[in-house]
Amino acid sequence: MARKDYTPEQAIGMLREAEVRLSQGEKIGKICRGLGISEQSYYRWRRLYGGLKVDQARRLKDLERENQRLKKAVSELTLDKQILKEALEGKY
Image (tube, rainbow, N blue to C red; front, side):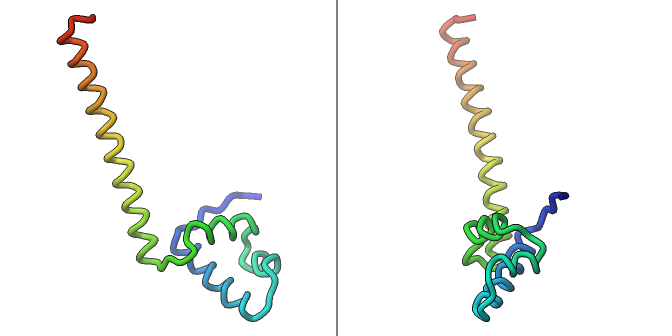
């Protein structure tokens, strides 16, 4: 079976639809089959995006991207600092 990549917005939409159908008494398995996703995907999405709205999910993704960029910058600066420190001590 081919893997489909859903955007956070699509996942949140499916979670909301699943919540409505759950409140009507449908079972999780039937809902997931109707949405075309696995139960594992449903529970993973519920853990990640459970109470989020679409705009909050976009903001979360932007913050994660920014955090990754900053971590990379810090690691590069730390490496530069270590190289300069070794050069001052004369350890070539």
